[in-house]
Image 1: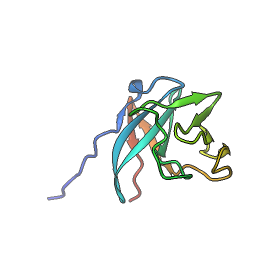
Image 2: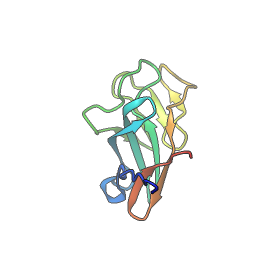
Image 3: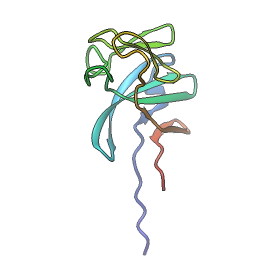
Length: 116
């Protein structure tokens, strides 16, 4: 008999404010990591919650992020990243990127995209 493993969703789409962000923990090949989930309408982008400048979390309090004009700002040193592609456009790690995590929205649920 075949065994099917069902991975639960990271969250429901409506848990992420439209135009906002939340943090969730996810099991990745490297272990459990904090992810930033950014929502625009029905689309969600995901990044590791790690600033490439100093390896610190980007949130100023657990799951709370500084968002301004389609950018995400690291609460520690002010590095500013485009929400659309994770590129640092200002601050101490200009030119570096946040590490993107592949996601898919299925119905009302947000899932990690896994490779088979």
